[in-house]
Image (tube, rainbow, N blue to C red):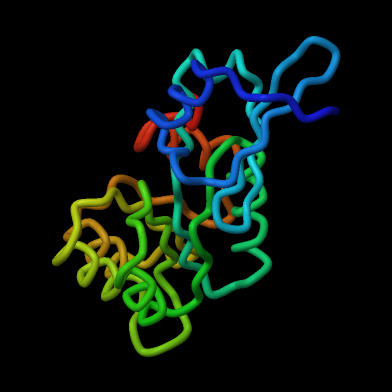
Length: 180
């Protein structure tokens, strides 16, 4: 792949998509043009044709106390075009991360968390400040927990163990695909 000068139309489209002031490299290979965008520590490779379709990268914050599950979800989301803005195991860390950081398009929150705040308490704090969609993920199927989650009107509840395609379907139904 060799670096080429960006066309004006690509630069304008990228600016409209929120890539303004980001580190961008334009390249082509075998007659295909690509934009390689670095946002924070993530690298996105976008074919020029995708830029014509108004690529939108949706963001998700994962709040899960089981690190392997969080990594699995993050891998699934990134493989399907979503950007994971953070993975946290404590509700307190989520609230701290929201101070001065961009707000994700979706919070994916486990009910059971390490730290002082559980997932339900964390969502209450988030909902006091924001109207961002929330999906609960839980392995706890108690009637009491279901009632507490329902009182917060989440956008969905996923019970562990879950099927990856079901989780993706619910996320897409809640915030749309990352390539709308």
